[in-house]
Structure formats: structure tokens, C-alpha cells
Length: 145
Image (cartoon, rainbow, N blue to C red; front, side):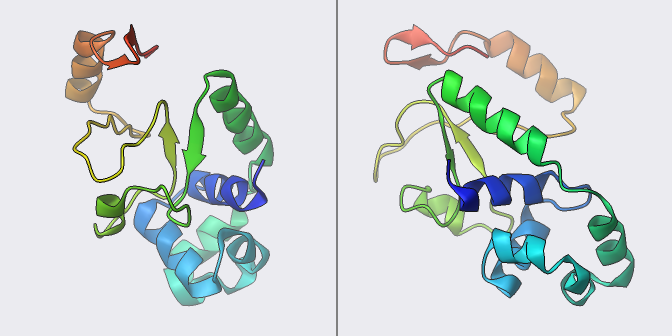
């Protein structure tokens, strides 16, 4: 288990810390590990109200470790923007995902399809996920979502 990836996962779970804010904190402090160590200084990055609110919440390490273990049982991997195999084109967007849960291989320099999730899915998104369940394949078998 990578402490760096686990810290990024735990940081991204905090209320009010989405993709952009997670990236801002990591850039400012140099790593997710260091950002979590320097929580008292978050206000200079996030602003006073948001910084106080975000740093008042406990870091849920148990949740992060459980997610990591579940991903391992599914044969998946966790990628962060620091990983070499993090998709190049995702690095170019303004609000890049702070972590990616990956099943299968990410082909280099080839088109591919990704299903991106959200913490607060819309009714439309949930309906589309249900309709396409089992249609996506990996290595000749349907993905388990």
C-alpha cells in the first residue's frame, strides 16, 4: 500500500475538498501527506471559512484503507496524478480527478472508455448506470458494476 496514494484518497474524502481543492492543496504543500500534516495552514489555500471547516473534520483513514482493500479484492488499482500511468489527457483538465479507481489496463496513447463516478449522482446518471450495467467488458467479461 502506498502511503502517498492512501493520503491522496483520504484527503479527497474530506467534505468540501473536491478535485480542484485537493489539487490546490497538494500543489501548495508538495504532497497529500504534507497537506494533511499542515492542516492548520489550509486557510491560506482554501480561504478562511472553507479552510476552517475542512480542517475541523477528522481524516477517515479507516474508510481510505477499506476502499484500498476493496479495490485490491476486485483486482483494481488506485492511480493519482503523480503516477506515471495516470492518463495524460486527464492531467490537462482544470479539475482533474484526485484519484482514479481502475479496473483493467489503461492503454497508452490509444482511445479508451472510462466511467467516472460522483459522490452525488444525479437521477439521470444513476438511471444510465443501471441501463448500461453489464454492457462494458474487460478481457471478454462484463465489469461488476
